Image (cartoon, rainbow, N blue to C red):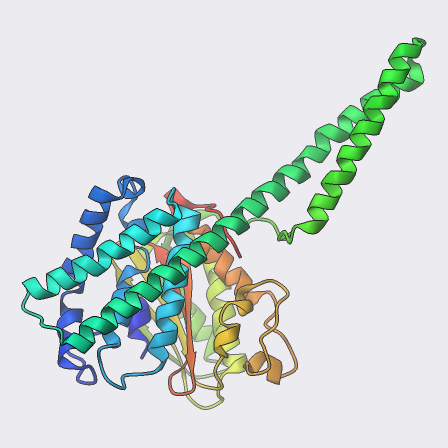
Amino acid sequence: MSANLTGHLSPDDPGLSPVTRAIVALRGPIVETWMNEVRSTVPQARELPVPILENTVPAYFDTLAALLTPGYSARVLTDLGAVASEHGGERARMTLYDATAVIHELQIFRDVLLRELERHGVTLEEAQRATVYAHVDATIRESANAFTVVQAALREQYVATMAHDLRTPLSTAQMAAEMINHTSNDPNARRFAEKIVASTQRIDGMTRELLDRIAFCKTGPVKLRIDRVDLAALVRDIAQSAEVFHPVELAIEADPVEGWWCLEALRRAIENLVNNAIKYGAREPAIRLSVSTTVERVQVMVHNQGPPIAPEDSESIFQLYRRAGSQGLGDSLGEGWGLGLPYVRRVAEAHGGSVLMSSSVEDGTVFVIDLPTDARPFAGAPTAA
């Protein structure tokens, strides 16, 4: 159930085709080979720590492999786009990549995947090979587009911050000029002071206009207090609280799952997802809450059954003051998604991580928070949410 979004499809899953199981069994060595080749050929990747370089690639790998199981789920096509977009967005926020580097590393992924499958004796039929090529090409387009969009949003935030900060020295200069104008007996000094006042007022007006034109998030950055956290204990505690209102099925891969994160920010983010699952999901089936790990990263997944989120709303639900469209459950209840999901994304991104979402009638709705195990090097990372 949505194990592809955490990079944990099982090669023993009888519901997967033989070729998908064979590919999934090679996930570890193929991803490692890809990382080594990216480091050696993409200059911006050479110094990236493992959890940032690896990013959501295990989830992408499994989702791509799942496409080779006929009828596995129509959902994986949507999942592939979601993972591709998150990958591009995280590259914009967490690396010095440009769009060319994003494209290059995904081309390397395609070449490494096909080469290593052949080397390990996994033969793809012509149609399967064409599927891989087509969807990797689609991934390149979506990742590059997401990279561009997020990079533009970060530039916008930077400009807005600079414009806001400029107003303090402008105000100081204006007050000083006004004081000179009122206290000086020198006509020339007063005349120059008046020009300074007029100029600072014009600049302040332009700054105000710039701020008004920029859709800048006024909630400020997420403040993190990074400490040693047992994520398994945190999720267990959240599950116990939620069980008062709704059945919860808990699945924890290991105990403890320790790392360096902000306890309170993660608690609030996960509680937001659980509360949404209770509020918008079906009444009877249990919510599934799980914790799993990949190389130097950890995933928290919240799953519920119920009416799906429409594909066209998959991004807007993470934006401040945006509402799900008419096909989304939030709108059917006559209420929007509030600030909860934007906060979840901001918390994940501030830890150097991502949020993945998948929703369909057949499989319900899944949110995955994917984080580096040690967020200390990335604390306060820029967020586009």
